[in-house]
Image (cartoon, rainbow, N blue to C red; front, side):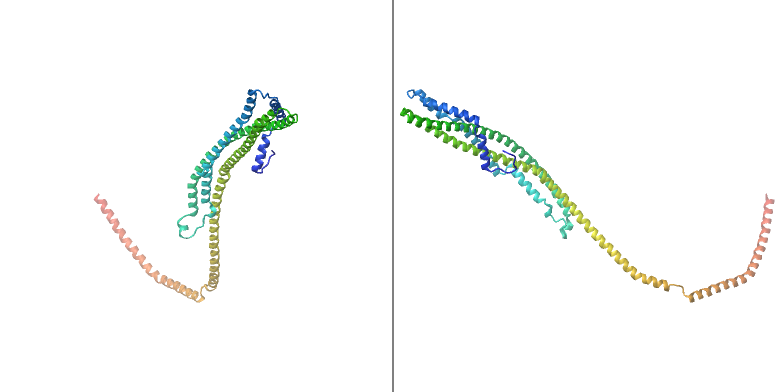
Length: 379
């Protein structure tokens, strides 16, 4: 079968299974030779020999029984396996249960449904982003436990598939053998009919013809019908094995997807949510800053408009009054004149004062000299 990404239907799987168990041309040649030899032995049977007849009948009775029994055992084991899987599914099998729990956790952490810009009292009381990341941290431990459970379940599925593949191969080998035995019976059926027709045309022993048709051909055809039915059962078993194996592989891929894509997508979503939240906060701050800057510019322009006129007006009107300067100069001149008059009047008084200070100094010096002389005599 060529490589294809298309999912095969049950009919296609069955067709492939049948094709794989069909005898190859070389085997068909050998089976035909064996069938002809068997029929020739039957046709040459000595009807007077009870042992020979029993030997033929015994061989016909046990033919294919072993293969059919082994096939039945394999299909019974498949029933038990599928039954256990069904029971496990009802109870929430490890992988299916883990994937379900992971889905619930991811839904709860979906950042697209979180209002990070919550307003009002609750928005002021709780930081939405911090609350979300706290939830994520709590859920992260739970998710890690789920992932561990999924990995354990994945390993179990791999082990199951290994066993199932072995059993499927064993069932296919049995089916191949069963198909060869069916082909041998078919060749013998055709050969017996031909030989019986020839014997009837030659008016040979009617009792032998009856024995061959009723005691040999009839049970052979019954066995062929049973073997064909078992063949169909084996084909269904093969398909069932294949379905279980493929379902297990799908679950294994689901676990791998959860470990890689799903968890990575969650972490990216959380990171992007945080980045978008921060960007929104920054944009709000920038808008607020721009509004404040615009207000500053507006206020400054208004102040310039209002104070500019006052400044210009003050520049014109703030010069010193001429009358004030005239009065100031007049006062200054009067002060200078008063100082000059004071000096003129003070000069004679200063001369008398100096003379008086000089006279006092001379008298003080005389007393000091006298005191110094008295001190010397006392010594």
